[in-house]
Image (cartoon, rainbow, N blue to C red):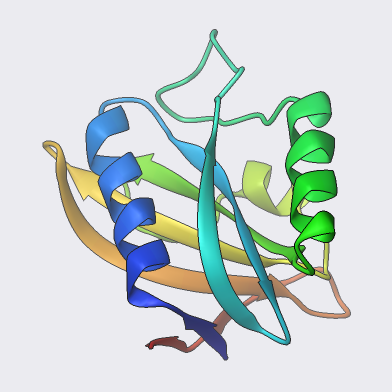
Amino acid sequence: MLRIVRDAAEKVRENARASYPNECCGLLLGKEGVVLEAVKVKNINTERAQDRYEIDPREFLMVEKEAAKRGLAVIGIYHSHPDHPAEPSEFDRTRAWPEYFYLIVGVRGGRETEVRCWRLDDADVFVEEEIAEK
């Protein structure tokens, strides 16, 4: 189960709506399975921004280092699926790491339709995780 504070959850949804029709992306910071902050990062995939996201590794490391200074860690990644369900694609699966939560926001016509959470299991298959807002 992923627990997320309301402010972080709203930032994720807001970023997804604002980025439409492109995919947004960001990092989920927290500890012990609780997301305390959502940090928006730039989607550097300019060729297929409507259906792909890519996080600059340098930006990822910068956010990770700043979080560590405050006693937090990157515990997940979020992104949106414009005009598609909030289910991971095969592309998402091939880029996923098992230690992270993956929060996906479905957006249709600039409006959020659903938010779902996923994790890779030992067989590299995404399994849905329950989400609890705090």
